[in-house]
Image 1 (cartoon, rainbow, N blue to C red):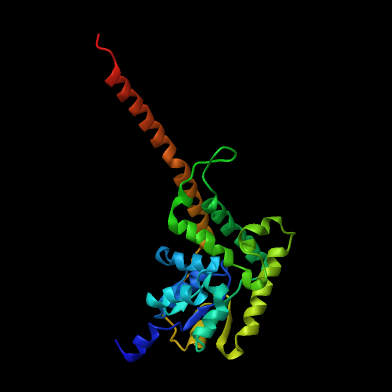
Image 2 (cartoon, rainbow, N blue to C red):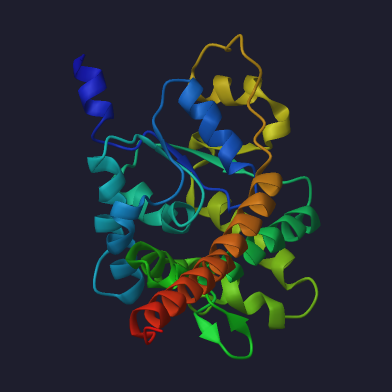
Length: 266
């Protein structure tokens, strides 16, 4: 390992500042292909640090530090994008890529697909109105992720969790305004020479030029996040309800077994 490699493993070199649903998975895949190690979403083992940051018992620096300590040198998506200011303070030499969609309306439509997945994931266990026998929120890192999401949008002056759970009660066009506000904030805090506003449809050329990398021979990655999220939402529902038939069959078998034990001999 060279001195430069060792240095890179201790700092963030590229910050993806775009909100979720702006092609962040495609960007992460592209950065990995260019030789970076990209942190797209907090790992389960890092979730407690992010939850502590959301609760006010920890800091953004501690949460960001979990990724750096694990050897990542690029970040993207939320909640990392929400902590852009803190990342810039920690790594002032980092370059920033602001991923954008074709329009605020397209982003808002895509954001709602993600919110449905999160709604299913965060819905608590209930056996009565609505009936939802899930155990997902009993898992510690799932609880941490739920708390962590409270910080998303707070940098825009929103209430904790409002961008994730409160948008359904907001008027039409509200989400689009938050998208524009975030992008405006990024453009304001990042020096022009360190910022690339990037639509993943543009492919390799602008990204490689900005990062000083050679153009790969492979095509630019195109990750269909909406398709993945719809499949994940279905899987989450199956997991939530799927244990009931097993429980029912075990109850039936147990009943028969108990009856056989206590049955009077003829």
